[in-house]
Amino acid sequence: MFTTERFIAKIWAAWMLIVMLSVFIGGAVPKLLAIPAIVAVIAMTVWCIECAYRTVRFVNYANLRLFFNLSFAPLFATMVTLIIAHKKMKLDVLPSLALGVAPIVLALLAYALAYYWRSKSSVLEFQGNRVESREPPQKVQWWQAGLSAGLSSLAYPLMKTNDVPMTGLIYGFVFISLFMIFYNRDKISALRELKAREVRENRRYTFMDIESIQDMRAASWLGRLFAVRAR
Image (cartoon, rainbow, N blue to C red):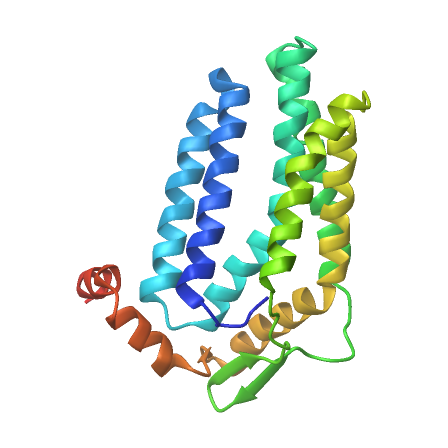
């Protein structure tokens, strides 16, 4: 999760999905959620620019990666719940919103439990004021990506043909949300310990391969633009 392979691409992939979900959630109940959705898009854009082109602090990037990995499933569940409650069931705005935030609340409760999990092993390796993740590289083969895309495209037609209610999607995303939180509990613990270590030692840890990240930023016109503004 915290590896820096395809550093800038990972950040903007996270931006695209979170922005898409924010727009869809805002569109489900526009009277109440349009402005929060706009604020979320702006905040996510600023956060991604900061992580991709300006910060040298590892914690900032790790926070973004953790947020993306743990939030996409509950946000999907919230989106589907809002659409069902407000558009299909014709509930008022407030009842729809109350149902819609339930997956997020459940995810936050699960995260609170995982946050205080004491992991026996750390996924982080330190060297001076530098830190990196010791996660093995995850290689996705072309056939795996194609299979995932194919199964995803068949999901809705199969549900519709077999008269599976859309609530099945909500249960599915909630399950994925809880699974992702507890599956990544060691990374949640490692990031918490890193923040505590920074406070305890009064220092800020940077990337182990900060030079290669700076080279990637220098090769991008956006990186050069925001680097100039940062100075």
